[in-house]
Amino acid sequence: MASGCATWWFWWTGSKGEPGSSRKQDTPFIRFSNSENFSTIISGKAGLRKQGMRRFSDTLPPQGRERKNPFSSRKRVFCYLYLAGMGAQMVKNGFLKLPGLIDPHVHLRDPGSTEKEDFYTGTCAALAGGYTAVLDMPNNPHPIVTEETLSEKIAEASRKIVCDVGFHFGAAHENYPLYNRVAPRVRGLKLYLNVTHGPLLIRDLDVILNIFQHWPGEKPILVHAEGVTVAMVLALAQLYQKPVHFCHISQKSEIELLKKAKERGFQITCEVTPHHLFLTEVEAKNLGGFGIMKPPLQSPRDREALWKNLDVIDMVASDHAPHTLAEKQSASPPFGVPGLETTLPLLLTALAEKRLTLERLVELTSTNPARVFKIPQEAATYIEVDPQESYTLQASQLQTKCKWSPFQGWKVTGKVKRVVLRGQTAFENGQILVSPGFGRIL
Image 1 (spheres, rainbow, N blue to C red):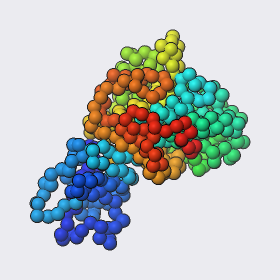
Image 2: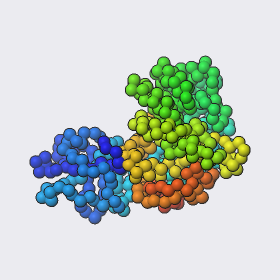
Image 3: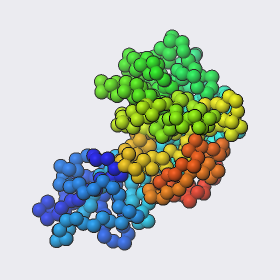
């Protein structure tokens, strides 16, 4: 498919008959009606070109208006839009109605570091960013490496969350006998092989082998691996035939290695963060402590390689990791930046700039995370975004408790206007409309 916002297709009637005939009833399509109740239904499987479609353009019409029919007015034309794997709408006001986003990698800091964030403020930030579900990491001050700490975290979250939340269990030196019991309660196992925030770093090879051997194969092992440890994990994934998910890939050498592994059929997936897609070590010099994270910001060459290999990347994860202003302004600022509320605006800006297709955006933020982490689709759950609204990101207006962003002052195009979860409007025009406890545990 050509690059751009989307691709428009037209079905010629007459000799080919009306769309929706018996042989085409199960084909995905978008129909643009001429009625005032203009709406677009987007769903997806491949094969439209073989079914009589003709490509017209690769951009969405402004303000939701229909494009002029470039063909003969004597023939009735139905307009179809192919956006694979999606269920979405363009509503009358020009907003895009998309599936709720899923973030596979957040640090909500609760329990233990609630001065930075908590389950309520973190999930408020998620809704404001278009996320209806997030998956929380285990590196709390009291790491989630036992059944007791997992149960405590789930109980605390149940009282506070306003969107759906799932959890990853932490791999520790001696906790592998627990894996079969905790696996049904979590979405994955997190293994830290490089220095990060928290006490979960593992460098003992015997321990790592035990982890791979004992983790059940249905759900992925998520790995914080950088540089040469990426190659080591690839070998282990192949040796033990376990699904492995690589977190926050940031370097050219890493993404190129993963590309080769995927071409050879390795059972792996990977994610990239918005800060590694949009920032480099050049910007880090001006950001000071607000640009310190793990993995660190890389060179422009590395960032270019991520964009070039976007087809290799399975998902964009915010790696939302808030800290207080005082901590980030200190002499030893901790690793991490917030990202739940800025990820989608940045991606929508890339969409407007034709660096990303709408189809790919939905795959990266919804379809693929749901598939990899086995998150069931919720009925009547979607978001509405204005793909054309331009504005300046202001950290003071964010829902996150930390109230800062490395993207402060950036001009972006595309804004979340409404979030509906299980049929109830949870967020609209900057306001949280549901109470703590509305979200569910995944």
